[in-house]
Image 1 (spheres, helix red, strand yellow):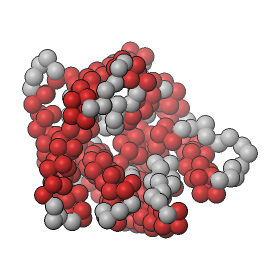
Image 2 (cartoon, rainbow, N blue to C red):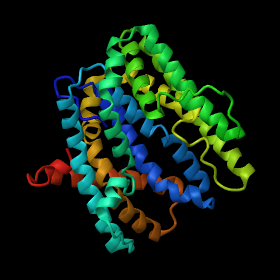
Image 3 (cartoon, rainbow, N blue to C red):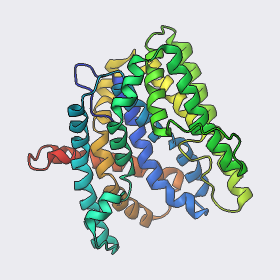
Image 4 (spheres, rainbow, N blue to C red):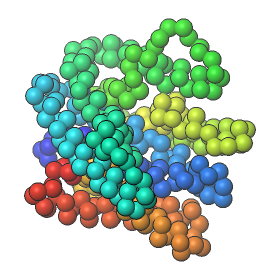
Length: 342
């Protein structure tokens, strides 16, 4: 969801990844109630939610691909922060008003609520601001480190921020006394995205790389689905252990999807730019505004009845994306407020 690519330097395979990821974010938000209810919609919610867990990792990987190989002054970093801070504050206020008047959720101190955050789904923007603030450290490491150093730190980040925390969740025990979590998971995804992007752009065997990526994507997703299913059945209630963004199965699927898209779509930029590129370029605005049309459409469609969740979940996703694009297009044409959907 980074906003740093210009039209002259855009890699439309990254736009394709962002387009897929924003659809997955909407899917997570519409399927979450069906998943936590552990009722009739649970199987559909389980599958769709499992398929969509790679959305946030993909966004951070794309951000790393775009930003880590560049030099960033403090001035440029503060400018990036301002670009997302204005929409964050504006949409937080909008959602606070919406929740108060529609859902009766009254918050007394709006300023404190926004500072401590997040309002609804805005946590990602807070995490993105944190990633921007530490760019002097992360980008300098990436630009100055050797290939072997990058791969070594990436491997340690996977172990410390994914594998060890996951097995602690499963077993309840700390497997290693050494603190390996020096690279937080979202910074780890940024690093993985940048390293993988650099490596993939050196390769010519796009077909084999694409197939490997697709296989990893499928395997990781299946582990998430069946791991969540059996863990939930065993616990007698829904489990999110395999849904965590640091879960190894989610990480594997994200790496696979990323590899597949970069390998395949980078060589087909005409198709991607025409069909998907526009959606990928609007992901930040869609992310900020989509919860309102999603809730309205979800309520309307759920009242009709008769539709299987296997059908109406993706239907709501498509309608929400379309409605959000209209909202973003309108806002971007109004000078006074266009900065809330950059």
